[in-house]
Length: 143
Image 1 (tube, one colour):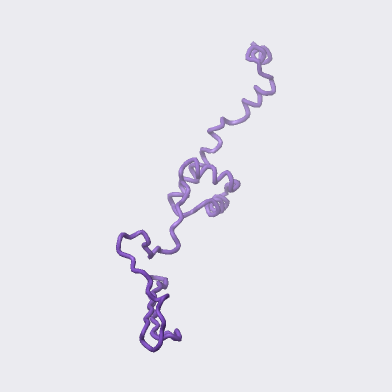
Image 2: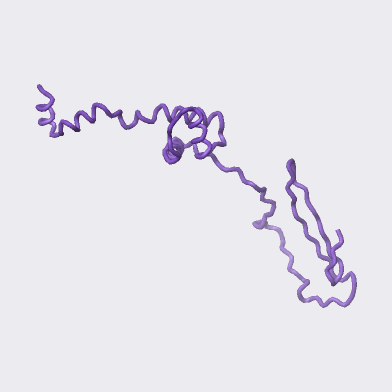
């Protein structure tokens, strides 16, 4: 049977048949790229789409960022972002919350109202905290 007769029986064009012969299967074209991406993801687990694309370019792959993102998403290789700051406030606690008594207070002299606050300062290796207190009605601070 000739190619023309087989195409007529299958109701496809001859051009479509030859195109089918020359194009790789849909799942096969990304196999090597997926393998390279998975190797890079194991080597550099914090790499996202931009770094992964740059690393693939360094390794000789000509691939765009959208294709890399699609493969990362399909293979569940998207990296999780680490939180930049540690959350130190717990507003959902079940302990007693005391009311603010200062708004109705009329100050007539020194040492009638003390106010304090604390803040965390992030250093390269650890967190430290800074405590500030205020003890007079003019608001001058004593640390």
